[in-house]
Length: 365
Image (cartoon, rainbow, N blue to C red; front, top):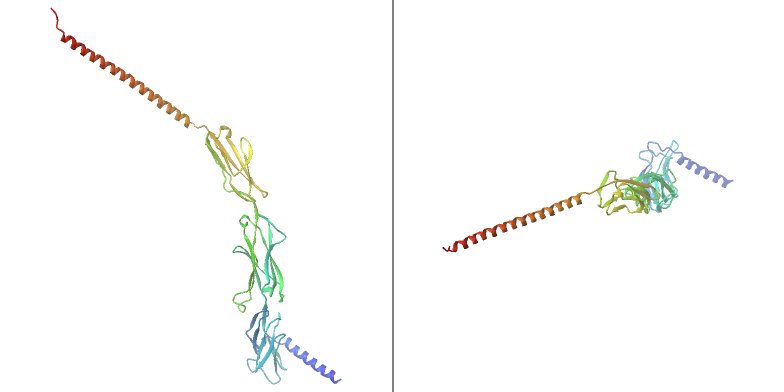
């Protein structure tokens, strides 16, 4: 019976102690004060805080004060209680500093955040591998392994150095968890070759480390397939002289690399992005259609070509013929004039010579 009574008394004292701590008033005017008022501790690191139980003359005879904790040691110096932990491994320590007497109970709880940076961060596409199609929706997934507390975690998705969006968990679990964050994207051709990655950062506030713990994922390079897009279009009439060369260009970009098919007034055939005719004829006049295609889609461009007869050669020939004719005429005329002139000179001299001879002969009577 004696031992039963002792056990009953001890149990009652324990109950009363727990009752005082758990049901105490945390809004009382002269409540205990912790220094610092908040602790942010990395899991496994040492930590400490002090509690000033009573700021004024609140302790009277019969008042009990203490610090309730589930880890660490305490030492009391007057109305100050020191709490120290060599290695904090509890995820929710929550030490309570209190005093109680017959009139009321007053206490304060130290806010302790125990954190653990992620073991790893990875990024992937949900239910998809290989190239993506432009204009289709895909889901990026960032997986953060073993992080605490997850409600302090900010996850940012990036393409290159451009932030695409930020997400935060609603999970209030204090122990390490693995959390998955998702972001929908609709890629365009500009995203082809882009590097996607995600960053997990623990935002622990001003009481946390000055450089918040950050862990980033590896990069994944996106391949985006998109239909061909023409670099330029041509709707104006193209006029070329008969016999001259003709060059039509319908260069385009696309992924995968597109194929080019030309349809001309004469026939259809596959060729590169540039169609060249060295010497056009009248049969080359008409409409040319270039089709650029890959498995995503097709783009087309139309060229209207008009072939004109060139009179330059004929004009040059006529001018040359006239020039030759002029040269011939000038030559003939000059020859006739020269001959006529020569004949006149000889006759005049002969006359003078005859006149001289007759003057020298004497007449015979």
